[in-house]
Image (cartoon, rainbow, N blue to C red; front, side, top):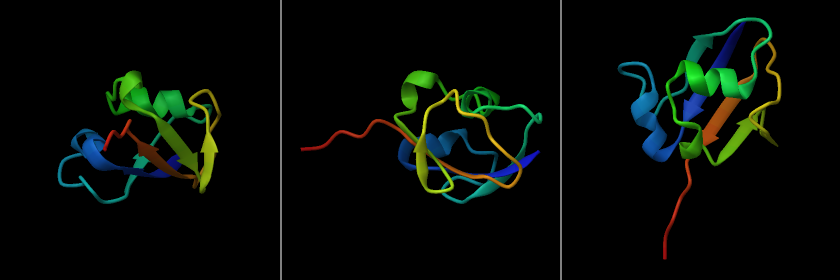
Length: 79
């Protein structure tokens, strides 16, 4: 299945070459979860804080579907 992914802030370094800061498409097996996607991009799980699928916050074990749009945010600190 194909999904569209956008990695925010420091996670941009895990995007395919030339795609940092831009949405990109990714091919995944049909029964994939958000965790599968994170693992395929070699993002350490502890570097993911908030994940959205089609604008709705989801857990890493939630399953994905063809055409989903995913946003992944790292932990963000500030002061």
